[in-house]
Amino acid sequence: MKLLKKHSNKFISVLMLALSLILVSCAKDNEEDLYPPIGDNCNTENVSYTQTVVPILNNNNCVSCHAGAGASGGIQLDSHNAVAAAAASGRLLGAIKHEAGYSAMPQGGSKLSDCEISQIDAWIAQGALEN
Image (tube, rainbow, N blue to C red; front, side, top):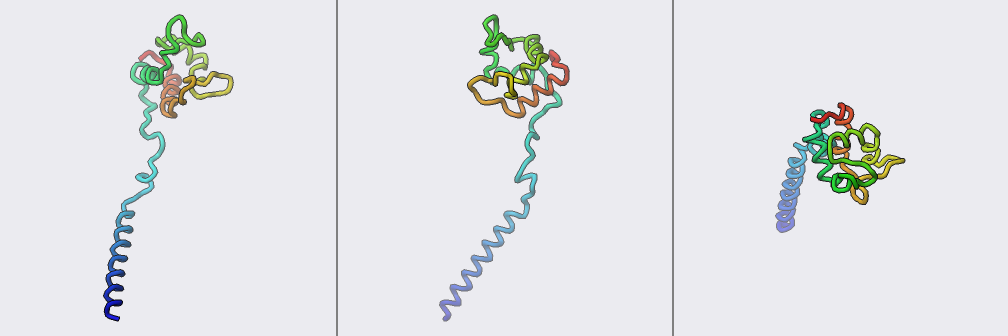
């Protein structure tokens, strides 16, 4: 009987320790830490052609297909004027948003991230400036 009581006390002690650790480990969790809001790191307020749009186009290999006289689909994306023209026609956003009636871009690749699309959209909405 003493042996059973001794093991029972150890079991209860271990169980209490485990429960205490579980409670303490969850005590500082909050919804913002566990589920950060999507898009918090996506700056759509301070977008510029040079610092935002050009890197997006280069990093997604847009310019490799859409440059010079032989630009794919006749769409050039290798200068501000060309990108602004594609933006003004609606073809740029239609293609990167994969909207009906537009060739989804990048062709054969993954869709641009929601942040990248939002940044290009913001740049266009702010006047597609050469900045």
